Length: 99
Image (cartoon, rainbow, N blue to C red; front, top):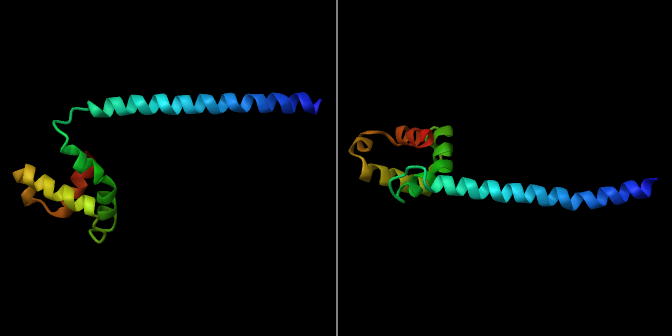
């Protein structure tokens, strides 16, 4: 009795793994396709989006943790927007997280 159950369990494992990897790959490609056309005007937003983790650490530490990607994004934002020049680094990091 246990042999048929064991055999059934072993045969069903590869199918479950295949289904989850298929779902992950199809969801990933759909996400990638939609994020590329999300309305960003240029590839410059990649600098800002890449800095999200650094911005989160910066905000959470109240400005004590400053990553290189955040620094690049702050420079980029200030070059692109005159209003950003008047905001503090913490204000810009919060705005970056709100995007």
